Length: 238
Length: 112
Ligand code: SF4
Ligand code: SF4
Ligand code: FES
Image (cartoon, rainbow over all chains, first blue to last red; front, side, top):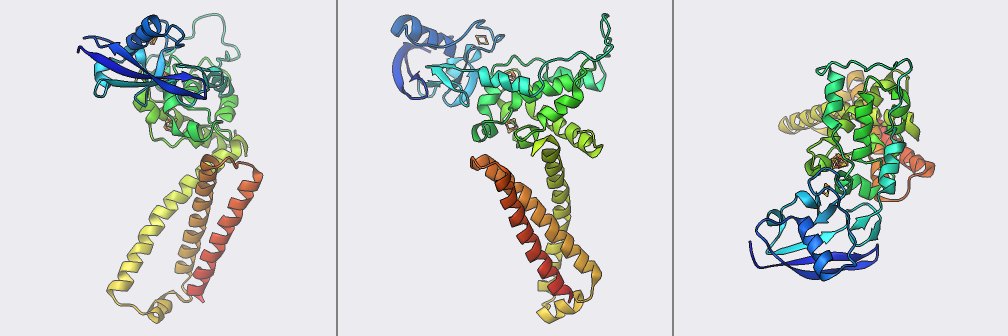
């Protein structure tokens, strides 16, 4: 692809506006390349985040033509419409400046959802032996590769409607720990994820799973939490 | 509401959904039957009056509908409005009670 891309970029914080830039189109070009071009050649005051550029750190997530994506793993030719791009900061998170969002509340919810590993009593110093094909191990493995990029969180309608909702990533994390046989905080964690804005608020419509660049399925994890909390409630253990 | 309350409401919503799925089918089948056979109001009442099975069915149906609507309405309120406290829960409970009362009144109307 050659020619010029017309790129509208959000400038400012919560109050701000879209500013249009013209960026030379190239044959193989990621959206992050476009943002970097703007910052290096057109306006050095543009703020945005990235680190690895290869889809490992999750810091480059932004809204690209209305869809949350890792910009370093998104080719322009896949998403540009008539040579146009609209770049905004990730939705559902407070904007610090331009394309950089405040992730504090996102990770605070991981803590509130019981996202920290708590060693089970009597775990001992040796390695725990976990059969790779044990169902719990498989359930944990399905969600363990989350890198906390916030794409799913930006894609979730329930987060938009209810800012208290713990969100797909934090609940996915809780589900992986619930299936970790070395963890000792399962009961407390069930209480943490079932609160007023916990797993039961999820609509199971899988926007999170659709957009997760790691192809994880937080919806399935949340369904697991709904089952686990329901079983605990029936046993009188919640 | 807390973890236990939210989980029980979720269970209640699922359980009433199962009841409703079955009850709505029965209800539709009886509607179609009544229309196809040209049953008059009197003919229908003749079948339901004093019939404990129909009374039980419609009491269950009305109760499940009231509970299901109540829990659902509470969720809609929590998502679409900033109103999430005990007062909102009470209002929803009141509405559910009204729906249930109307349903029970109709069920007893068919019975006696
Ligand atoms: S499935 Fe649940 S967590 Fe995922 S986007 Fe929908 S409401 Fe949010
Ligand atoms: S679940 Fe996927 S989209 Fe959500 S934070 Fe983890 S890696 Fe990102
Ligand atoms: S820069 Fe690390 S994932 Fe995009």
